[in-house]
Amino acid sequence: MRPVYVCRTPKEAYNSEYLVTTVKYEGGSVIIWAAISWYSAGPIITLNGRIIAGDYVEILGNQVHPVVQMLFHKNDAVFQDDNLPIHTARSFQSWFEEHEDTFQHLS
Image 1 (cartoon, rainbow, N blue to C red):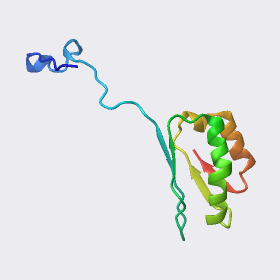
Image 2 (tube, rainbow, N blue to C red; image 1 turned 180 degrees about the vertical axis):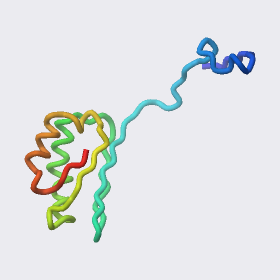
Image 3 (tube, helix red, strand yellow; image 1 turned 120 degrees about the vertical axis):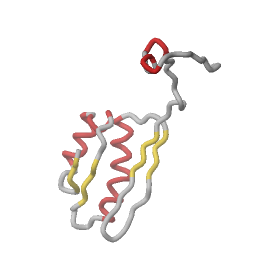
Image 4 (tube, rainbow, N blue to C red; image 1 turned 90 degrees about the horizontal axis):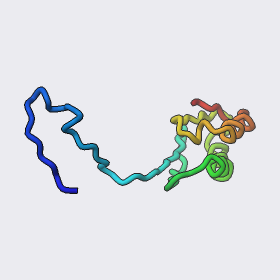
């Protein structure tokens, strides 16, 4: 796309008629999961691309849960999410209900 130059007065500077919307970066999605305890840090798990709730629940069970059990022997771990759509999915919420004795879910 070639640049477009427009002359306007300061009062017109942010008038929507003179603005062109652009996307600075190509889309993409990366989810980073990490565990930190008082005594140690767990591995950093990186998920590239779009992840659906079912895949994420599988990752919780196969990768996250074992790390939490290893780092938090007293079952005092807290899982904090950031309200991604997969964090509000029913399968995700159900998984935490099943494992509420292992750690607390802080939404």
